[in-house]
Image (tube, rainbow, N blue to C red; front, top):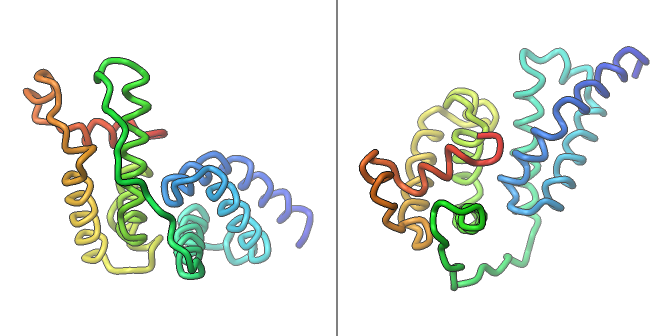
Length: 188
């Protein structure tokens, strides 16, 4: 790799690191896995930087690599993680501790989604990508993105920790706890 290409890659990696780690965290559900996943993707992008940098959108190219590497991680894992059956108590909606608990509950609910649904929900609603961008990142059709998003959101809305009846002002607005959590997610 020439020095100018290497400088271009370093600039890309430095400016996109935080965003990629955040997206990886939402996909993987664990900060350590997210950082490892991001490092793996950036190492792969470095090896093929000429091809990546010539793509229409290097961001979309690397995001697709991120989704693929995360899916590979699930394919290779033989022992499934065990989730707890008991959800934490939900605190009052106005305090910061309650918001942390709600986010923790949401992360637990996200972890129950199949890998593909989780990837669609994360890319579509947290990364604020269009359905076409999500389809491109995942290498699937637009219809698949729509159906996986609908199924994923339905499962999240049915999740016991997220199905809590919201306080009166929020109910008057026609919003659910899930809707509030999605719109106030990190970077959302």
